[in-house]
Image 1: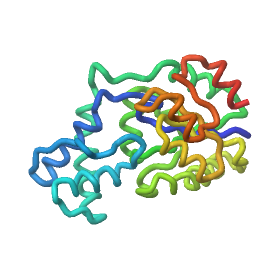
Image 2: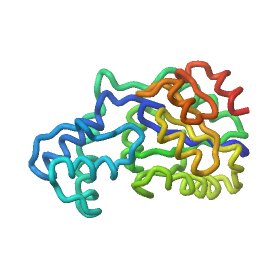
Image 3: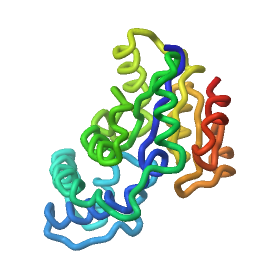
Image 4: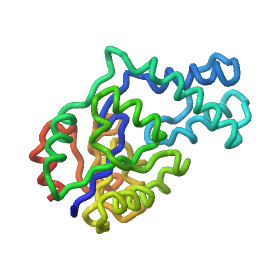
Length: 225
């Protein structure tokens, strides 16, 4: 193993048709008996605990670590019922690309995501992708996204028994937060414009490579080789 790919989930691998947003609103009702909306709460590229804390604060609710943990328990309970949705899908080229990469002995794949491990498992299992990722870093590790990289590197080394040089690590995502997270560990970065940011936006934030989507597997392979 010499190349490590660390993948974001939402708007990078899949779109969930708003499942997470609906589960958050349901969690607020179960947690505090309030009907709310997510207007003004930044979601893209943020970790689940940070989203929860800002969402609770918006409605004047306590947001101690215990409050956030209880809120996220409600969120994870609501999420499975929201995942079946006509607009939920694996993004272009992703399923084929992950399958191709899995056959290449020089490449390891893991997750680096703002989802909790359980949230990541629910989403990716629903879309048949969870088996590609034997390790990762999740929001259980830290509320701060830029803290997650070292956890992913440690687990990658433990799983494969080899270290990965920073210049052979690629952090892949759809937001500037993903790019910054990769830069924080000295990794290379791949931005994909399948979320709210264009290729120009992602390039301006310093992404090593940018793609409109992952439908061209050969171009992706050229970038990481």
